[in-house]
Length: 524
Image (cartoon, rainbow, N blue to C red; front, side):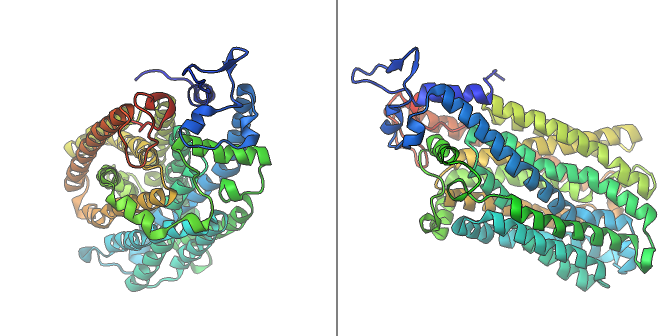
């Protein structure tokens, strides 16, 4: 992969390529050896009106202000949304640890009827149903600082209430509603990030967000091991009940803090200076060719959904994400898969941690390099090839060391690709914001539908090799490789059209031969 400049250097490139004014003779106007940003006629050529407060900045002032703004946004948004996603993922997947802590025995779940698998999969039914309406509603009201923490508060209560169920029916009801409410968070956060960051910044920030899910895999194993070892029978409650109570209460507590920390959108936030707010709005407009979020009156719920469904790129991205998420469904049963190594419950939970720690490191490196180079396709493909090899190894052997090596690489292989693919959605479908919100929710919802059937491929009788599950994972991984390849060919062709001055829906359309310097380019 080719080398590329850093984000600050990229910002300088944006100034020089996209903001250099052009004189009547077609030459760039230069002042003191640098572009005269005060005129910004290039932006006007693209139909963009530069705010006066930004137009009077010199290139150095623009770079300094943008670096300060980016740092300020990072510190305000990322720590809290990552913490919230850690708890979102823990509350969703702690049932896997609860299985080792005695939940099936306490509720008399029938293993022959796959009742535990049904309890796992029913969550994704609610999760699928709510994602698109939730994202369109969030885009309409424009209040993520209230909406996301409120949803978190509700799912924390539902998660804690799982400790009170006494039978299979109660468990099914709680799990369905947990999925229904949790559905608001992840696609909402993806859309939220795309309203604050430019396309070249999204990959790494999406990796930061999804690190919450990966870190939760490590922390969940440690927390579950501690509770299972020390709290079983405390105050008459089983270890599995304490698991839900403790993690649910923590979720509710963090949701109250989030209400006072998270901002809304750049245009409606109050913690930025006027200059910073103007730049936060302008840099998104400069990146995608129009103001991103103005007010609720400009957000059409159904028009956005209609535009997303009518774009063929949405469906190719859907196939790509569906295959990756289907392959990653192994994480829903990761403690059970690790249990096949033959260790006791506490050691099994501890052994689930290293693959997730390795995954966090690999995901950050892959996403950072994808953003640095502006490349997407190979960062996805090479990761999926690693996952494919890991699934084949897991199904082919029962030896201890090779099986754990496979477990160490299957999780990073899948999720390194997943994080870059998520950023590719916003890169490929950047505007209008209602379309982007609908596409993110639709793709995430349908891709998670794979978790409904995947639950039945990890029954105890299929251990230790889980041949059916690993074979299906290989197939869905290969499907994603095909989809990514198709999408790359499509985007390369669209970029060539932009260079020729041919109109492309959803892109900035520049004069012939000038799209490379002045217009929108799809990231491939």
